[in-house]
Image (tube, rainbow, N blue to C red; front, side):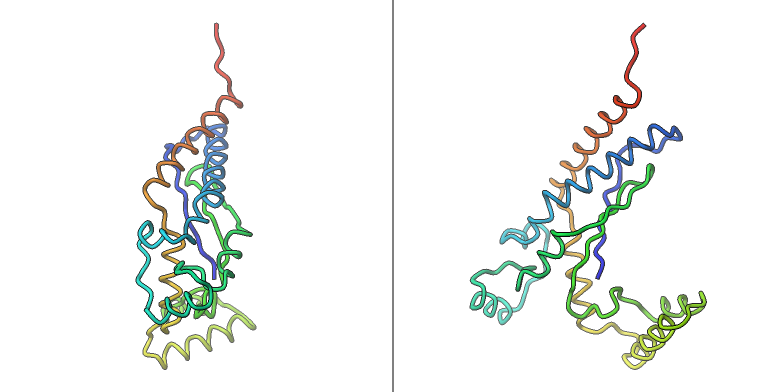
Length: 196
């Protein structure tokens, strides 16, 4: 399943090409900083309070304590943590900021995306062919059997996704400072101030 965190820029859009390049560089730097500095905090004991994770069941906590000796909400075997911290992709523009894309094998998210009946019908109307068409038809049949409702695993995958992509207010302030610093450096590098 793909997790996406958007780091939107605080710098207003500007038609100047040099400014857009500086905004893009600042957004990429902020997204990299978020992944390197803040994402590991999602796998610590205080993450429940900081990011507002949903309460886990007592049976889940007991099993985790017995097997691993801790209660870290998003870390059972450590696979999710290693996946998220090991690889990522940053997509950025010069106007809207950056998106940090991370992969995680969350249980229950069978298709990588949680689709509803309307989304599948839109994709089928786009003219999908071959294996993609067959997969969408199977998903559509399953959703019709369930009355259009998501499975419990899909609901849990959405909840885990929301937890992993949460950004705390202190982190937002730090990212804004990083963005402003890199933007200033990039602008000064491209167009240094001239004195008369």
